[in-house]
Amino acid sequence: MKAILKFKPLFIVLAFMTIAMSSINAAGISGTFQADDVFQYHPVPSFVCPGCGQKGFWEIAFDQNDNPYHGICTSCGFEKFY
Amino acid sequence: MDFNVFYMKRTFNLIALFFVCVCLWSCGRTGENNGGIEVIDIENAAQKPLEVYLSKYAKEIRYIPLETSQYSLLGDASRLNIKILNDVICIWETNRSTVSGTPVLCFNSNGEFLNSVGTHGRADNEFLAIFNVLVNDSKNIISIVDRDRALAYSREGMYKYNFEIFHNEIGNMSGMWLENDMVAFLKRKNFGAYLNDKNPRSDELLVVDTMGNIVQKFELGKHIIMTFELDAPFGKGTGVSSKAAIAYEAGNSIKIIRNNDIIYDFNISDWKLSAQYQLDFGKYGLSDNVIGAKFLNNSVIESESFLLMRVLFSPSDFPDYNKDYNVSYFIYDKKERETTCIKFNKEESDANFKNDIDGGMNFYPQYLKNNKMYQLVNVIDFIEMAGKSTSARMKEVAAQLTEDSNPVVVEVTLK
Image (cartoon, rainbow over the protein chains, first blue to last red):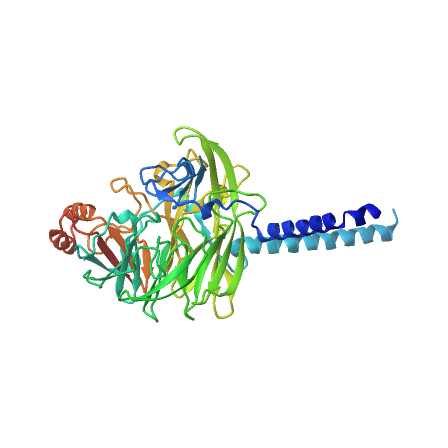
């Protein structure tokens, strides 16, 4: 008990940090990286969709290094993670 | 064995048998009409494709060349979308790259250019990308749906206001103006360039007012998802097949296809979803190994007399399926309660209504409104088809066009 009282300010800070972190998690700030908030999709009309075999509907998003990251067929909904 | 016990056992067995019979009878009844819901039998129709003649449902066909000018240049017809606001034809290009963007172009019913609507840019009254265009006939409003908001313009192109519509779609979003001047639309949840088991993808039908306030919300359930490894010829990566909810306009109401097996009508007077049709994919349905046959996005068109739909039988799920029919076109006749798979035409590499009205080009609609169906055709294809056809009107229109002309709108009036 004496030890707790001795380090009272430290316990208060720790308690405050725990509450703050749980609030941030609940708000989703430190949750899943919402990739679609960042990526823009660009049409690649010549690509044949592996899902439906159609041309003209494929759209692709690039990562921060300009590598293909995610593709989607806007006709059948088939997706590819590169 | 005691005599009374014997009779008690026999009576009990008879009662049990009676209940089993009642259960089997009611199950059988449910299978026939699925509790009053009409069944669209995709599996059986897929076995025997048939030609469907345009005159069965339509009475008139018109070819409308869209005026070509420096202010009204349109690209390839396969990337164009069409909607009708009162009598005005609104055309826009599918382009969600935010680098450039063309506005919505308005033409009168004879194809003369009227004006453009919307400007590409980052200002409050400008759009970055077009995810759909929703038209409000009673207020004469054209609203361009951007990534997370809708911008409302007058038909003449004057900016009015904008409101939040967070649809979270990557492709074309689905939505419509309701009679009460609210907008109903489909929202994808946790959708995008990631898959996360903790936050599974799902859909919601939302109704918002013109301030962006959510007035009604319906949970439509989780997506069905299957993943697998991809390799040549498509390149290494992870493939994702999924089934999500679909929404489409039908007259003044919005219809929802949930889990790819039930079509619901959304009634705005009591805010209820009521089941109308059950889709029976039979052996082509969802199984442990395959996602199964499913509707293509933005492919369902409904009139008072029929439902038209494009169904995907994926080559990866059904490798032995006839390749001409990997994307099949089905029509459900509401009066006859019959489903037909429309026969593939090898010469046209497509499945269309056979035009027996004027002997012109065959037809498949991309939009239906006010008892009229519309299709956009590239001018080169139109001129070529006019040369082969016996339609005097089609030849007459083709004679006025050059290879640089805008696409032609084919308008079919239903009976």
